[in-house]
Image (cartoon, rainbow, N blue to C red):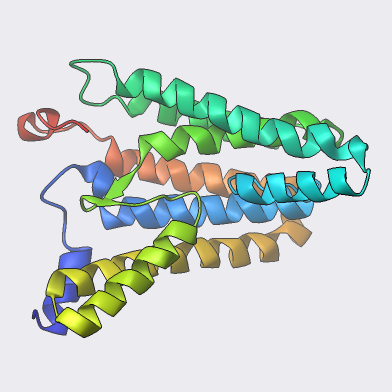
Length: 236
């Protein structure tokens, strides 16, 4: 089993693989989505940007109670989320395109920034666009340090953190310890993003989503900077 200082060094040291899979990228993406969810929930009519299960839950309860006026409010974000996945997969499947993430990620950042300026009376359009952005991100960033990871929701990361920790306690395998810490800090980044977003909304209103755009621009410079010849030979 690796000493604690080696485990922490493995988390913060520059990755030997693709920069898109670095821990810094995962933290920025997760925190940004946390901020965005706080913004859409508090300033855009109690709709989740990335948690489509939450939107479908609200939709189901409203239908059960005969509140049909909210059908489009909670139905269109999941539908646009699906469209975002289709668009990102189009770029993912392009052959001989090592930096395939670049175009869909730029689309995501542009849409988040532009949609921020839609007034609250346009929430019926804004929230589906944010859903599309999260659908794009689902495909663009699916692994951190070669571990499967979703940066738009915390359910799977939380589960994986607990599973990896349990395996480490039983087997004392350092790779399980690494994964438990990795998934744990991703969950923490998402949670802190929600808290930060919720604290900013009373002062910035719907413009809080610009913070998400700024975090993603930072991520863009880390993940999609000009690659070395070795990097360009890598592709997901």
